[in-house]
Length: 381
Image (cartoon, rainbow, N blue to C red):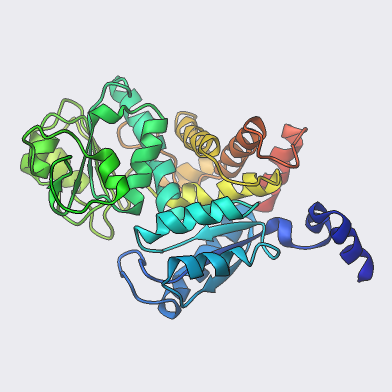
């Protein structure tokens, strides 16, 4: 056993050849913001983290340990996680409450030389980005001109809004609301820096109903029933509604289409069309990042993932998907692929790997892309 140890001592990159590190991701949580359950603590969050590990392995062949940490202090949590770098090829942060999650991810990205990814923020953002790009294309709207209303100002809402801006939405066309209503500059309460960044000039809008009138896109990361039918009636022609509250969304497709037949509706629910599900992204994002030895997951890689997912929905749907879901074709009820589309691993992993190489964060560039596609497909065959 001494020889591989000595090789790794001389060349740390050799750890990928001699150990499992190159295909090993850790799912880490302190259980402070578990989806639909809230702050239930580290131990109670373990079933969710174990389930996340199963999805990594099933969808992309990525090995996972889950680690639940009894620590609420952000700096101590950063120290603990950073100390694990010799063991893992990537860090998936999960269910850590805002605003601490922003600080923790930022500090870890600064300190660590491996990908660090808070899926609650960026995984959701990537799927939302894909849905927004396609939804607006279907109705012929220019992404740089549409007006967006975001209901919610937590980790997911902020990350989604940031990525939508990277994809072409203009900051001056974005209105964000929180539990107190519209976020505007002279509101007076103590707003964190992310809310301050998105605070609009005071134009008299105070409520979600005020903001959503005339809006082209609604993004909800808030609570059940927040978007009423009366509000939906006031939206612009061909509205795109991304209602992501779980388990009950801000509105349902049935409720929205009852008053606006021209609406495109996406939710987080598997029993409705257009499910915004992070499993469309995170296994394949890490697959591509690991395979090129990426030192980080940057904005270019996230945008590449969003575009790859969006593009896949425009292609003919394979038989194995149709046999499960029935008739599917690109349009208002199919703006993003289904989670069980076998093409995702090839499309998204390759796009992410290429983006890592193009943006200079890959340490092991891929040269044979056809061979790579066959390699990743075989992982889940």
